[in-house]
Image 1 (cartoon, rainbow, N blue to C red):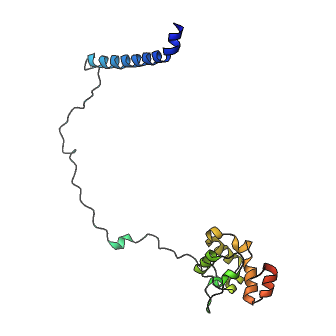
Image 2 (image 1 turned 90 degrees about the horizontal axis):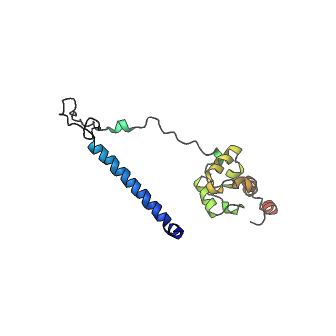
Length: 171
């Protein structure tokens, strides 16, 4: 007998729970059908004839939107310039910024897009200019300070290639 309960005990327990649940559901349903209508809650709402207040008013279409109404509430503000004259393009072409240590082709292109094309511009950067440019460099953020661009640019702008190579290595 003990082996029977060991082998089939779980299945007997599950069957017993299903049987109790079925009896509970059927007993509850039978009681609600047999009880008088006064004791049962109304399952179906009474149908009421529509009144004048229940009939919705026809919707009038909205007037067309005029283009003048679409103007923004706040006028757009032009972004402040990135830096002072130090980043403005200089007449007379552009320098090869790739000669500076830490400037590769992608960074060179990014600097050109930002308007930095000459060594003199970088050499004349102030702290505000450096911060503004650094914020625009994305993945290259921190490179101007780490690679000492301002100092490198001072040597290259002055044409002191020997001094540059002595401090930063071969061009």
